[in-house]
Length: 414
Ligand SMILES: O=C(O)C1=C[C@@H](OP(=O)(O)O)[C@@H](O)[C@H](O)C1
Ligand SMILES: C=C(OP(=O)(O)O)C(=O)O
Image (cartoon, rainbow, N blue to C red):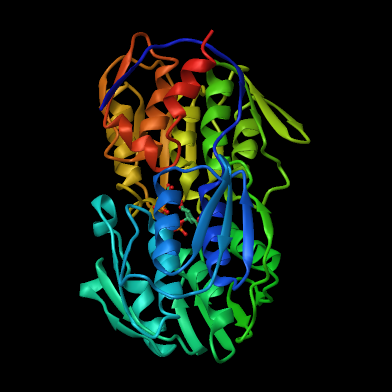
């Protein structure tokens, strides 16, 4: 689907969708509880829907209480032997260890860009922990056969944190206690979100510096009322729209959240935008913007939003952590360089682990999302400052995290 986004100003208040990261974690935790949990404020983007399908396949009984609440009776008891994780990296690396709790073989399969994303980091640790793995050379589909036993394992955390999240949620149900030694953990706030979710379901895990994790086995997930927070990754995109093209208030998000992408507020302030932080909302207002420096190593999903911000700032912004971008829905560093070049914005990716973006006028062009939801949203936000409408090919990709994005953007146009 193509989308044509005309330039213009924005002003208004929006409520972003719920955090898909928290939603997927809470769905997994509800499956692992033997009791009934209630998840509130849950909405469905493609990734959350994939996680829901996974827990139903693995035995959860799910009932919709009202349009945004689910009642979930947990308990692992697979109804099928294939988990379809759609295009979700998190569902893959989370539900592989969870499926490894089962004593029967489970195949994990996905589609699209996910088939090119590396899964190698999972195999050695799973085998160490007692799981039989058919690894397909490091990519999906893969097959696991448990039950995962616990014990001791080393994990490479330098490509993604998501598999560690899966282990932290699965291993409390293993027969034995586990010591995980993690090398080079990245995206560490996402591990805090995992520990937070586990704790809210009554699970105890201790850790030191994201290097050593101790997970007692034979624990019990308690039933819980869990309200899913608003999504800071979606909020980041909307706040950048406010900072570059008017004024946007985002509701149902708190700066006290553990979500990695709360860090957008630091970048906005560095760029000179006005940011007003209230108990349950954050507002970003346009001011003359200046170039900024920012390290996004631990919040890689912010890159596309930061690119739209840097494009609107006076001077050359430096954003570090580009080595984190190669294996997302596309190679996001290259995609940002290519697509922003079409808009007349120079992005230099020649130096290791950083990109430099020279802010300036945005000119109309036909651009491409590369099948990546965050690229589509980034280009749409950049288009607000363009001389004429920007076309975005593959705009339907926003369904992965924020199906209502284009409707919301229209809603706040003035
Ligand atoms: O745990 C999570 O919810 C996520 C962790 C991050 O991935 P990596 O740990 O692979 O960086 C992030 O990019 C992804 O969108 C969601
Ligand atoms: C990379 C992302 O998600 P995942 O890794 O879960 O596919 C994302 O939402 O930007």
